[in-house]
Length: 291
Image 1: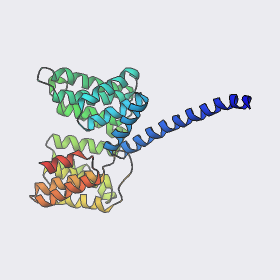
Image 2 (image 1 turned 180 degrees about the vertical axis):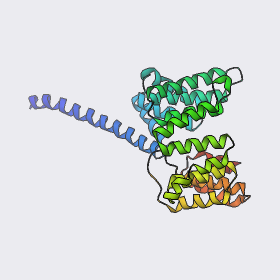
Image 3 (image 1 turned 45 degrees about the horizontal axis):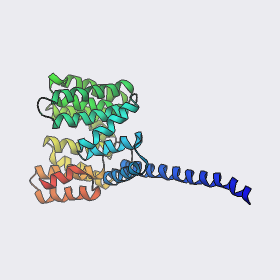
Image 4 (image 1 turned 180 degrees about the horizontal axis):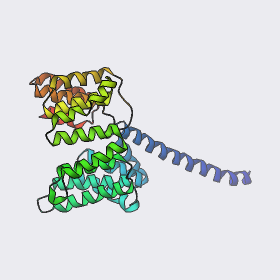
C-alpha cells in the first residue's frame, strides 16, 4: 500500500498541473474569442483575471494593451505594449500596437511633447511594415499617420497614396477602401464612390462594397439616399464573419450618420441605439448618442 501511494502522488500532481494548464489555455482562448467577437469589456475582464491569477505574460500584455487603447486608457496601454516589444521586438503586431499607443499619446500630449510621441509612433509603424511587408494591416497604420500628421512629423498625402498602392497590390479589396479613404480626405468624393462601382456592377450584393458606399455618403455628405439604400441592403444580408469586415454595429452607425445629416434626428438616434444594442462596446455610437 505504501508503494502505491508513493507512485500515485506524482500522477495526482501531474493531473493537477495538467488541469491547471488546460484551464489557463481555456481562459486565454475564451478571452481571444471575446476579443475577436468585438466584445471588448468581456475580453478585458477575462484577461485581467488571468493576469491577476497567473501573473503577466506576453499574450495577456498584448490583449490588455490593445483593449486599453480601445477604451482610450493610455496609462494602462503603454506599459503592457512596451513590455511586449521588449520581450519580442521582431513581432510586427507588437510594434504596430505600441505605435498606436504612441499615436494616442501624441494626441493627448502638450504641444512640447507631441512631436516626440509622433516620431515614436511613426518609427514603430515603419518597423512593423519592415518586419511584415506583405501584411496590409500595418500599411493601413501608415496611411492613417501620413494622412493626419503634419509634414514636420513626417506626414504627407503622397506617402499615404504610396501605401495605398502597395495595399492594392497585396489585397485589391482593401486597396479600393484605402484609395476611397484617401480620396475622401483629399476632397475627391466622386472618385471615392467610383472605387466600388465595378464591384457592384458584377456583384450587387457585395457586403463590403455596399457598406463602403454608405460610409462614403456618411463622410462626404453626398449621395445620401444612395448611401441609405446601400446600408439597408447590408442589413438584409447575412453578417459577414471574415476578419476585417464591418460589423452590423458599424452599418447602423453609418446609417445614423447619414440620417443625422438629412436632419432625421429621431431616426438617427434609433440607428445609434441599434448599433449599441448590437455591440455594447461600440464606442462611436455611444458618443453619437451623447452628442
